[in-house]
Amino acid sequence: MRSSVLRAACAALLLSGAAASIGIKVLNQPVPADLVPLEQTQTPVPLPPALPTPARPTSALPGSPIRTLDPLYPQQWNLKQIGMEAAWALKPGAGVTVAVLDTGYVNSAELGARAVNGYDFVSDAARSGDGDGRDADAGGVGPLAYHAESVANLIGAARDGRGVVGVNPLARIVHVRVAGQDGMIDPVDLSDGIRWAAGLSVPGTPLNRFPARLLNLSLYADFIPLTGCDARIQAAIDAATLRGALIIAGAANDGADAAGYSPAGCNHVLTVGAVDRAGRRASYSNWGSAVALSAPGGTPQDGLPLFSAGVLTRRNGTSFAAPEVTGVASLMLGLRPTLTPAALSDLLRRSAAPFPGGRCDALHVAYTCGMGTLDAGAALKLAQAWKP
View (cartoon, rainbow, N blue to C red):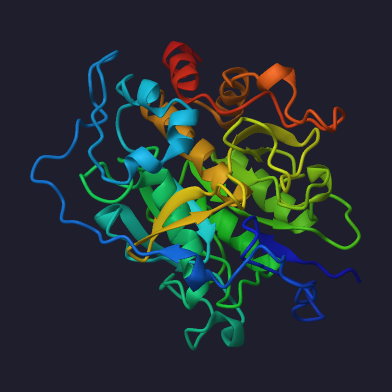
């Protein structure tokens, strides 16, 4: 029986799962030398009170300038790189429900009531860290809980004059906990979490009151040996896709062919690679035919500015490239709610900006990273013009 290792697509966070009868297999490898404990990577930034009048809302008239007064926005180079201001000026429309399958719910000041404490699918009580197994409290436990909050804030942090701003400040975020406090995930827990997030029934679990049109999976599995998508995960993805949900996943951080990974190598998944500030493949990012497009993921020397636990941190990984695409997809659905998963995926690919010189990696010409880099403005224009 093969074992499996699931890991969050962030270099500092490891998520691992195991085949049904052998328990949990933990990665036994050194942490890269350029990584330090999470608390040492955080630069404290006080969170000021919200302004009485928020900056210009997402319902600005097409073509009008966007005034974003959140104090940390000038540092969010990734949003400028993907053309968010052009997208916000296109009147993206109503909020859309997005599920974040990750380390669990955190009461983020950047999300407020738009963050939903969904469900905890961690079945192993010993790993859950909250004293029980599966239950209706998806609260994150331990220092790794920052991961889900960072992902959620990147998707939907409010434009409220404090902290950072997310790609879609109107999005509702449903947190689905699939990782224990140790960062490990059982593939069955992940599969059930995917079904539940999309509004499908899971035995012994109440239905999701807020079924999601988009599922963000900033995690990955590299089954040993690398043989592609796990059948249990693929079955859940197929069911969610038929339900009308698009699954968006990070390509993983091993600098390898993403086709051998789950969920990156699964069918019906929009797999996202990471580029640096120059638009080139980040050295850690997986590549290959499974990658649909890329988005800013930063580097260890030039990470993305993220906000969690009331502090500004800089992190890198495909974990943070994927939610940029998820956020833009939610804006597209706000414009055109009838977009199907296949149509969304197609428009995001076709609207991607070309890589510099036509290649994502000048040193490895055989490496491919999808159709290009996420272009939010171009994607929303295609969505605006789309007809069933």
